[in-house]
Length: 317
Ligand SMILES: [Zn+2]
Image (cartoon, rainbow, N blue to C red):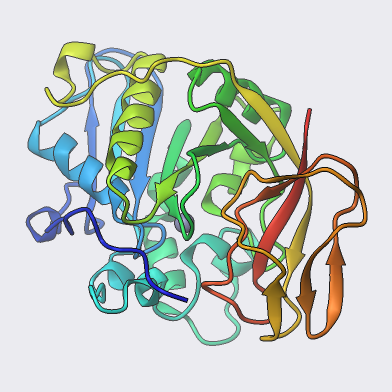
């Protein structure tokens, strides 16, 4: 499998290490007016650098909230610090996926080895507990249009729809391997007003990925009413709002072996017309679509190992 070319610059974020929260690489400002605590998080995966670029631009522009509070975080900096042009996929995480440790069981467990990622999550947890609205910025292994992941709740879907961009909202449960930051605590509690979205901006290192990250970040901050539009960086432009569609994920296909192969080249959002179509083989066993008009969500074998999600099946709601 060839690497995609790296068409974007790798941001240098070392000047932001200190933070102002007591937690390295996490910044927070409180306005004088009441309002929500809004957090933008980047580098949940160390190789997904578009979010880091966008947060760096906001820090350099000295964006401050006019209502509520703004939190800007570079999350898995340990992984990002290992980023290498020659092997960019390798810096996704150091010991384990930072985006799979967000259950109270994992965060509070005293058993087993404490990974760098678990340590970082514990370090950030107090701050995240104060957050009302989170946008977690990601990018994808394969070249696919941006996806806004709303999680499994109705409030998540409504929140995603309030953004009006991008076209595709993915309603999903997350991963069997462990809980995502987006699904942490009250973000997934239907009775709480807290809410969170995860944006997949495009292929990790393609040109358009930064534009997408700027678009959703600007939109998110303006929709929540905590900043003035004129305070956003000059080069940022508002996305053209589109009619959105919700794709409900019914099943995450998890590889059982290293011998998992797709029968065709898939990049994401392909519609497979017929139920029972073979799309892959896992150690010789056929993987088939469960219904007609099945949409493939984020197929990729770039992080293949037993237990990892390699594609999800969804339908248009
Ligand atoms: Zn990611």
